Image (tube, rainbow, N blue to C red; front, side):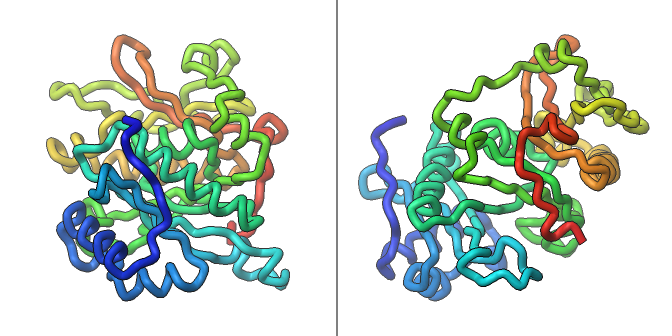
Length: 299
């Protein structure tokens, strides 16, 4: 899809449209960022970008300035990052690349202001978000949060859990520049496996055709390892809530352990393996990761 435009939103009417779009997507008033907050963000250094099809607002991304290392004594001007608080695209326009283009526009906003890092969070079991954040944008993850938004029912909480991975998008790095420009080749699942990467938790399939997590994850013995997640976690929630909760417990324990050991999520793969569609995080350790590893809020 190419017949759309992206621009910065600043007027009250534009920001009211962002509020209305949120209400269409999330049927939960507690998740809505209201227009009176949005106008304050827009007029005080925040970034609110909208995607339009003609005159219709079809997507947006909201960001505000934060601190890369909140506990650091570094001057704020040397410690700034952009926090990407929320992004959404109307369901009928998803899968057209608009979310990706909104993130690239957000990257331009940051680079033009000398900001090198954009962060946001996402549910580690939602493969479509992992694909965008890690595979397409070149972001990394090295911090896992349990119940980031608590456990009370809301649009941001699924089955009383809101675990999140922190996405770190080092927007001025060679890694990201090469990925978004298409100069960094993307390895396939088979190429990773041929390179001695090991699947730590290969799944099985139950009678309903849903992936079942391994009883336990293997201990990694190399600098490169693969961790499997469901290709469609939302479908598991709909059809088998018990299995969905088992996936949450399994991934929470394993990913926390891997990240605490110094592994970093550096890629995401979706493809056919063993005769069915599969999804995997790629985790790298040590110098193999070829990235700047920052432990600023590990504790």
